[in-house]
Length: 212
Image (cartoon, rainbow, N blue to C red; front, side, top):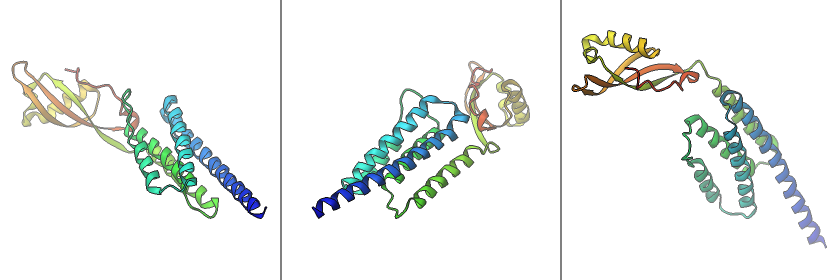
């Protein structure tokens, strides 16, 4: 009878621990989505974020309960983190969000902590860093566009300033340097890679290959 009471108490503690961790994880992924959606406006990824997080949390919780080696759980984490979708192009930032979704699920399900305050603090830290880094709009990236250019007389080093000015006027981008990929003397064209700085919100400009 005493053994049964101990087992019942242990089962109650395990159920209570699972529920607390599940609540922490659910709130964390909800806040992560609240950070993501206002800027990216992609409902499909929201579905995937929730699905990745919840399924990974449940699997890791069951693995922990079955006392399977933690290396196997990290193998699962690695499998999820390298998943590629073939139907659409996924940006590096979106892959970063997938990584955070999987990492939070593992953290909340497998972390060996004596109290939940440390676990909550870790989630808050991850979410805070995500929130801050997401809003670094003042940082600029050097982007590149391949352009088929029809004035090969400007590709000479002596005409570099005129080339940059002409490309800037045609594309509307502030081109600051150019690389010559190839030259077609039969068509009097050159394939150039033009570099410009842009904020993240300007990164999705259409390709300017057709701007001759």
